[in-house]
Image (tube, rainbow, N blue to C red):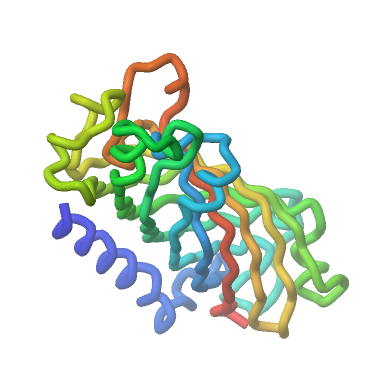
Amino acid sequence: MANIFKTLMLSYLLFFFGKIDSHAQVGMVGQEIGIVAGPVAYFTDYGLRWNLETNSSNVGLGVGLVYYLNFAYRADCDCYARYSYFNDHFRIRAELDYHEGQLNHFGKIAQKKTTGGEQLRSMIGQAKVYEIGAHLEYYPLSIRDYTAFAYPIAPYVSLGFNFVGYDPNTYSTLGPLEDHTFHTFVGYVDQEAGSTWSVVAGAGMRYKLNVSSDLVMNMQWRYYDTDWLDGLDHDNPQNKFNDMMFWLNFGYIYYLNF
């Protein structure tokens, strides 16, 4: 699994960032590259999913490389493309992300001074996740006008899909995990690496720094097609959803063709 993702990351970097020297060959569209980073909140089987302490404490860090196709601009003539609503209001974003975090159990049961409470508090999870995918961004304001400094901020919403690789780890500070697992999770711990898909919905905004660069703020909600991202699952009625993640990130975008 590690070798697969090293290959994916290298291929991504060579394919996209190699265009810096040859972007004029693309010709028909503008291109942008950037880097983003920020906190990741995990919504998994650790703790109570909508519990404030769980949601504010099971937080990790994510970093990402992003690549954009900007259809409002033509690289071959350093000019705007022929106007269409799609060209002036949509971008396509490809990205490669990595995020990880430590997961703990919170909530009333975990706080109890009982054997079960101690088992929950002592169960520690680690999520390590790679994602690569493509998203479509919609800008309600004109991309052309934003590029021409008609306004400094450009909000957008996005939707896309990612291929996901995950490598969970679970252990207990009390000793061997098999001897100190809370009864709910007996038989429902899996530390094998795997792969899946995620649906990604997002919203954010760009701030124009100068003619060739932007700052970006982005919020993403990711829903995974698995409940094993954290290495835990169970059949109790409260387990209604697969694992999810919320990512707030900030970054820098550079326009290759300007």
